[in-house]
Length: 494
Ligand code: SF4
Ligand code: SF4
Ligand code: SF4
Image (cartoon, rainbow, N blue to C red):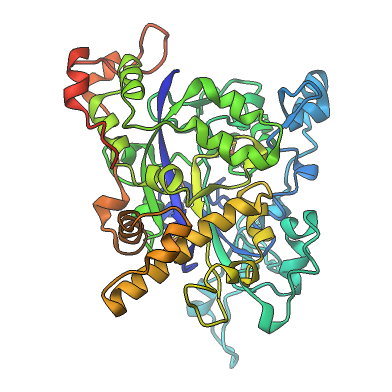
């Protein structure tokens, strides 16, 4: 076992109101400059829909993520398609890149015309102008072009999940059957990132101390294989500097114990950030799981119990600071992902082991809810289980169903407790939860405060000189003797 720490985000999709504040604040901080006008490190998609860039989930076109070779070994889909030799031949013309039209041509408006136009009896207008050429243009795409379309015909026809899973019959566009929800997306800071493995320059690295994936701007040669290799299309080419750029997980803030900009400013308070401890030696095995139905379990298996004495000892041996282990024990994301198993990674079948997870959304229940019909309704929810399973569990509907059942049981229990003074135990036993679990879930998902949603330990800046260890990698010096481990740490389950 080799214990590593990973800073991780969970988003509760039931609470996202699609306000795009996260996208705008991220843009103001990170991509508000020439060369990156079209890039949104954080974007919010309406689902069903085509996403941004257009149909980014179509890996037959973009060749992102990993596939298993005939021998069951991981191969980047890009390399599998081209082969190592062809990859080098294609280094000057990678054919699997999204075009600028798949993103959108960024524009501004000629605002000056509004105040300076003279001598006309017509109302002045501010026409759109391309930020690339400065010429007038017709707008035909944008980063949230199908925003709020609520599974209209256009959204259904262009949603890769619907096409790939033949859900056209199930997902109808008539008003009574329509549904929509928002899917905010950032780089997933994956445990097994394809972007790093396909980079010919070795410019992409995963920080040893907190798992944040970054691009070394000095080493990047602008080959753009990372843009194809990332199945989430979360790497963007800066046409001004000719380097690739990506979400940084706002590492300067994380190092100071602060949440990312997109989380800090999230209006719906849907985001949670905390540490997970994971076993690095299990990562490849988990990504090589052959059965798609078992991918969620194999990825959960990589995440370690921070209360386990053996895990704590190994973490200390691997120079993980004491307060980081404590922080992992208090982590909200550990509870949502591993303890209650409410959250899922986006498209686990890409085998990158994403470290941004999502609590799936509930959808309208038309019948009166009582304890006997509560779970029967899940199969008939507006959002088909198959659609959510295509996004979050590699098609395993049972996993999604279990999570939705727990969320419904929590709502029903809290409602009966509020109205009758006593929660209904019948339903929560059915989903393997205790009243304590329910109260914990309710607290975290519904009314948690800032310090409960974000549990982020500061980096050890004072030990910066020690960061490079004898492996030539980042690490921290331990200052406490090993004997202190047992009395110091809480190994009781919380
Ligand atoms: S989501 Fe981020 S870490 Fe994962 S492959 Fe894409 S760019 Fe790399
Ligand atoms: S973590 Fe920071 S860089 Fe990444 S999407 Fe959020 S605000 Fe942008
Ligand atoms: S700020 Fe929060 S609520 Fe608003 S769109 Fe972004 S994730 Fe959703």
